[in-house]
Image 1 (tube, rainbow, N blue to C red):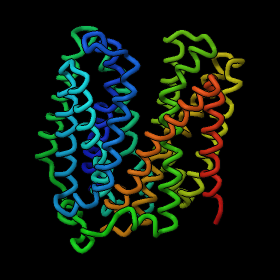
Image 2 (image 1 turned 180 degrees about the vertical axis):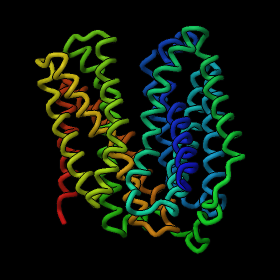
Image 3 (image 1 turned 45 degrees about the vertical axis):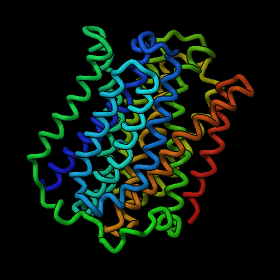
Length: 384
């Protein structure tokens, strides 16, 4: 029972943060005319968000020496809420500024929530608890997919931004009055204040391996979300509604897979093995994009579910393993450093995917390249 309140609270932290991050692409079709840019420019906004997330996630460990993880979570949500509120001003430069501010708030939210849970979570259920918390990311995306179009339909894109920002303030207000004992023990030892988190990660073979693997896994996850719909529409002549359905299948499968992967990892006490097979499966799915045009709706649904479960469902197991390997007082710093590598993958691999498409003009070749990159990292988990 002592885990329920912190777990629910950190889950809502993740949901709200992800809602803010997933909102801009859904706002773009309605907002771009007033802003005066092409709707495709929203890709720049996503890149800017994750660019500053890399930096802020890296410094999360040091921030946790100054304030408690709960207070840091509040600050992050406030910062992201301000960032998206700024984006209600229809000026491209101001919107880019808002995206950078969102990223500054988004980066440390996972290290902070991991620090809240790490010291109070028993090892036997660690992967499950962290996977449930990380389910907030795809849940936030699903909430955005429902909330944003719905509010735009009855009002406009600016009103949608105001509501999303207001929800962040409501969450902070409610959680401010919720107390739990862990807060007294989650600040990092001040002696580690000047120790570089990235050096700590790179010096540990297992943490280094996790960080580099998350670079490729996160890139695969982002490319699935960004390019599956385009591939189905432009390569296989699906309409938007049909292509959107298959993307939804992939995301829902990812939501279900996160706690399931955590349960399996706890049961066999081998997170590396779980991460290895999830990496292999997502790599195979990415390579098989060549053949999905011949599948009927039933088998394509199964394919997308498997792709989504593997490419979206790994995060909780990954973060729980980072927290397990790191010393308790370094969990926040190690998580932040590893996440900076994760977010860097979100920035870099979609660029590689796009450049490959520019050269070959085929989405399936770009997915194949991504498959090879990810598979090389996944296989390393099988080595003792």
